[in-house]
Length: 210
Length: 210
DNA sequence: AACTTGACATACGGATCGTATGTCAGTATC
DNA sequence: GATACTGACATACGATCCGTATGTCAAGTT
Image (cartoon, rainbow over all chains, first blue to last red; front, side, top):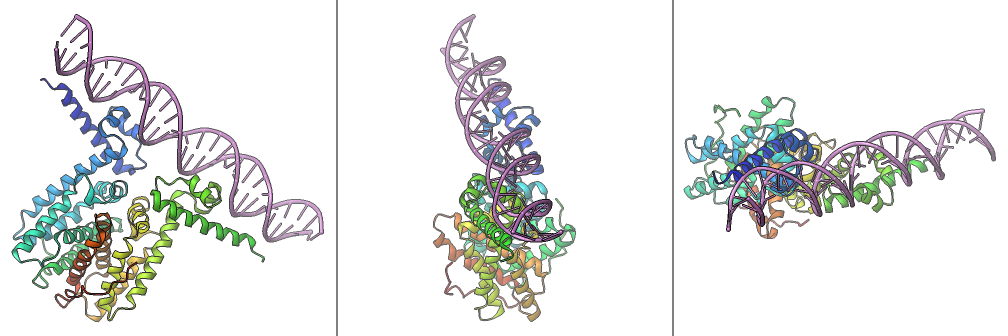
């Protein structure tokens, strides 16, 4: 029981991140008030500035948490795929589906890049990109994917996926355009495959909804 | 000379948009002060709120102007391509290169989506997307591109291109990663082509720098 | 048991946005 | 051609909101 201090501090950090996550998702970064946010967590701005330095610091912590959750979920889904190529596709589709969550959209896709800059230079190193990059590297080593720059491929794939999600969520009937986007993503990704038209007929996949 | 009123008003609008473009590019949307911005244009906030409603309105006008410029430039470059497939690739590469401009990055790619929401629902209708979509539709009609949803394809391609540009510009030596990104983009896009590996050996293309 | 540390609360200053009101050039009406 | 009116723009004001500087009290130390 020597560290009761660190324990409550950790709890307060978690409370603030949770409150920030909620406020940023509902009101957007700039419209979210630090006074309201901290009061909602049962604390004051003093706690916030002590723990995170400034408003950006809290956003960075929130983004880091969500990003980690997304990456681990994508890996979890990818692990159930048949081979590594299907795994890459499954992870990409998983990103599309996860990005339909308003929380992910608002915080990670819109406000995150605008406030914190390019995702590839975030303190979290953007776990999502890392996961995709490793998958591409495996496939290149196996000769399944053409020998492209792994980082470039990962950026393009995740960019396409996340942008597709933005489009889906903004559309009138998301559930109608989602399959179109997923099919187009599979076809597009097949450009990296050495076997032509590899993923064309895979649309009947049972997609686990987020 | 019956309309001296409308004339000066049009000039003032142009001045404000120009000043906004400069301020938003240099300081970012939220850090740009309306007082400084309008003073820089030789006016006051009164003019701004009368013409554009609020700060978002000015950003929308600025984004619309830049977006239009980008689209016309992409079409101009695309028109010089040999066939329609090369045209699609050339336009995509043109977007990547244009997105290296800090003004485009900051205003159109980062602050624009964060403040105004999804680009496909902007009042400008996002001219860039329209151009790409039409190119895809032509290619599908010609049987050069697989029969995918044109809008989905356009969204994925532009998403990949713009995201690649974000990555390039944030990297340490942009001129080093640009060819990697362009090559990966060509290979990725070949996934939409009915002929496999269509664009693989085209990296020696003379790229007109922005 | 007194002292020190540091996590957090409170108070304050500076800055910014949006609105409400004022003003004057340009235009229409007689 | 003089007067009334419209509206484009300037000015003044109130309301937040952020970040810092200072204060306070519990937790750990000697």
